[in-house]
Image 1: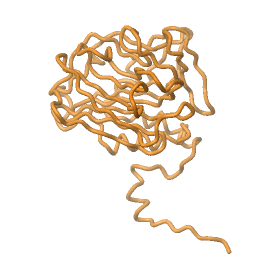
Image 2: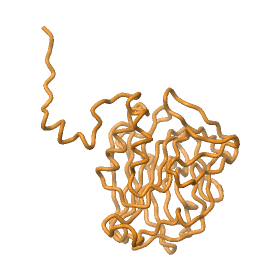
Image 3: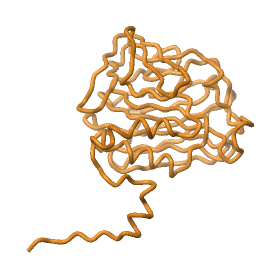
Image 4: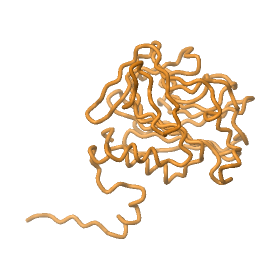
Length: 273
């Protein structure tokens, strides 16, 4: 006797804006860039699929924020996934400081309720015992930075960390995933700054988890002169990423929980999650 699967239409419909109707890598492959391009406040979208003859990574947002190639990382693909492989010893992407990367959270051309910053991407780690810079505009340990995401493999529980600075102090939020990151699996990582309210970090290797810090959050971020980088802090002085990077984004707005969740769910099948 053949079994019957019953799906409640009202439940499926209520979640259609958050969860795609097909969990299929090919389906996600053709929608991932579109999802990234439609992120509100987008300042840069780097898929690791478009690069020039120098290895420089093109920004697909249309705002021309090309990231410069440093070291000897290699572009490749894992099935349908384009990625850049970094070896942790000099490999990273960077762009010099410019106004479009200096989100403060006080921009009056953005509605007050949506002011803030959100950034993230997909990462895969080749070592699980070091502090590694993922993406942002900072130098990791100083207050002369702005915003950045880290993988802290050197700390028990392997937390994903999001930090922001107002130029005088650094605020931190950590997330210890229920299932610790592994070298074989892609990890979605995202950080969000809500001025004077909270900072939040999301991560997933299968289940999207999050954590917040609402204590002493600054009213504005530091307008630092640090480079925007992927795979290393500004200046590349230690804490370089040994792993792979794909589909990174930067938004100059506070993206809602729904938008972050939707972006994750619409791209995760591509990354085997």
